[in-house]
Length: 521
View 1: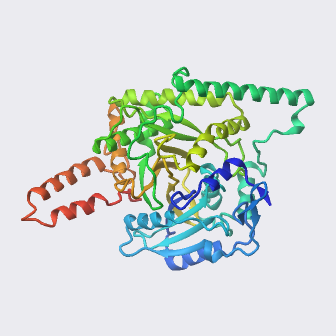
View 2: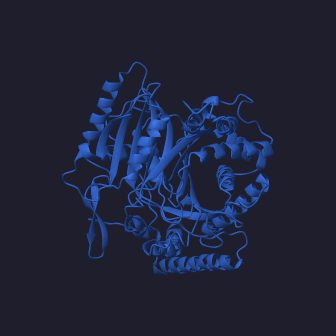
View 3: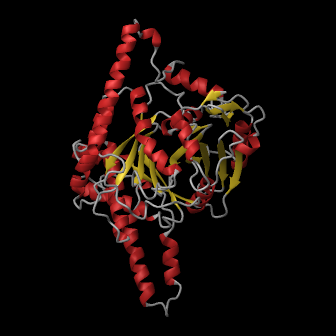
């Protein structure tokens, strides 16, 4: 048995029926030229189910010991349970795909088995198929998931793989290709410590660094830490910060990476700054549409990786920065600058800490969140308004046994206190957003997709850079949400005024409004 570390165990301890603690997502693929769909997908399914030697912890399940939680090897793993094959009802649009993903993301993983599932989904149009996968957050974080995705794919379409992505063979091959077979961990190497005095000094320095970080963290509650934003401090209550049900809603969209990078260059901002500003503008519009924009700004948990270079072994090596989303600021440029300032303050706080010190700091500062969640008070005392997570992905096109990877749309977790999670992956020349929300608390979550496009266009206008339809933009990766939204509004108004002559106008407009707008590849 292997002990599960405190951070990973926290996800297991917090899980209940209303708050599943697994992460995953939908990967879209296009079949290779000339490939028969049934033969190709059957071969993939066989390859996945034939795996017998698993990388940790894909072959392990959770057991409870006297001193904590442990991973125990499953000697009789049932691959037909973990690898499943589904088909969408005709006509196989993205709407049907996201509905299926929403249902799959709702159900809890079986703790008597290894905590993962993979679903091959056929029936999409344009020779596409999808893979929905989910794995418990106790077993993996966002960066770890990217390592697994890259281990299952190649950069050459003619380079088929003979192993499953969660196999030990794939793990060893990926380490050898990316890191020459060597990986590092966050634990200190004792052989590098010359003597006992150096070891003691390192411990003393760690204690001082942690004490300084905790002091700055505490002073933020009384306004004496500059632009540093912290959990619970001036976090407003909105309809996002409620108790959640067990049902989920999943929507996704792709945006051209070039649009964001153009704004970055013009406004001297990072990609993460602009992404947060997009999300802030979208949330501001969403709350204004519900007449509940609060006086205080929303606060977002922005996860950051604490992994050392080459570390592919850690289940969870993640911390967070509290981002002031500046949703109470009308001007989009001032909103972006406020977000930048809060992110810089958070990064400065973590920059003084080693990965091990930062991990301990995160555990200490997250204890109140664990306590409020266990006591069922997360919605009364929300630590954050939402989560916005930006996961760096592969920069080149990838292929899985010749099938082109068209998009990666992550699906994360929500729980009491924030009913929506926005996660995105940068892949090749695009940004793939996956948004998960409580189905009861936020039934119209698809509107966030339109609001994200509106916020991006607004930033482009402020930056003075080209937007969709200008300077050779790729419409394949660009939505036309603003124009469509206006059309839908007019359609609804017309339906109300002429309900007697055109009784079907209003239902038709409503049906169109909830249509997922994932850009076709």
